Length: 289
Image (cartoon, rainbow, N blue to C red; front, side, top):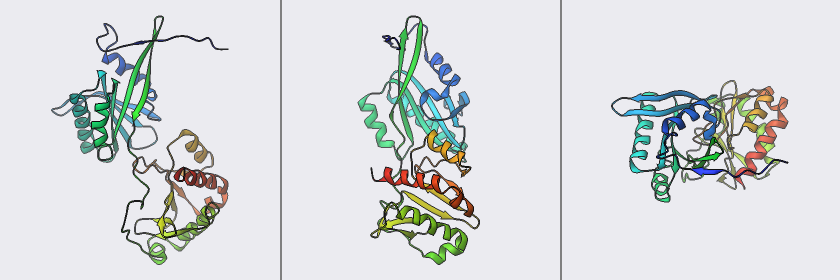
C-alpha cells in the first residue's frame, strides 16, 4: 500500500530561488502539465511587436490550435489580463490560419478576477489555470487546476429563432446522391436512440430535429465524395484513440463548437458501424444529460 505523505504548500511569489522563469521552464519541459491536451512548445519568450514578450506559445500536436500562455506569480491583476489578451490578439492577427486561445496561469485567481474575465469568455477564448507549488523534503512539484475553461458554444440551431432551411435536392446538388444517402443510413442509427428524430436540411449543414425543434448532438455535411460527420463530444484521448483504431479519418477537433469532425466514405458506415454507433450514442447521452 502506498505511504501517505504530507506536502507543504509554498508561495512562489517572492521566493528566493523559484521564480517565474523557473515555472516557465517546467511548463516548457512538459506542456501537458497545464491540462490542455496533447500540446507541444512552439516558442518561449516570444517577442511581440512593441508589446514585450509572450511567456509561452503552445500548439496542439494534432491540430492548428495555438495557446498564448502568460504566467503570473501571486494573484492575478489587471495588467496580467490586459497583457494576456493583448498577446493573444497580436498572435491571432499575425497567424489567422490558426485557432487561438489565451491562457492565464497564476498562483491565485481571485473571485473578482473570475467575474471580470468571465465577461470576456465566449467573445475572447480564455482559459484560467490556478497553479500550486507543493514541497516534500527537498523536492518541489507543481499542480495546475483549470478554474475557467474556454466557453463552448451552444448546440447549432439551439438559439436560432430563424434558421434558413433548404431541402434534400439542395444538398444532393451541393453534395451528391451518394453522400446524402449516407445521412439516411446514419439517421437509422440515431432513430434507434429516439424514434422521433428526423433530418432537418439547413443551408450550412444537415441537422436533426424532434417535433420541429433542433436536436443537433450531431450534424452532417455532405460533400461530393464523402460525408463529414460532426458529433458533439468533449475532446478526449479515449475517443480519439477509438476513432483512429477503427481506421476512421479524423480531422481537426472543432474546439469552438466542441465537435469531432470525421470524414466518412460510404464503405465506412458499414465497416465501422459499431464504433460510429458508440460515438453517436455518447453524443446523444451527453446532450441529454
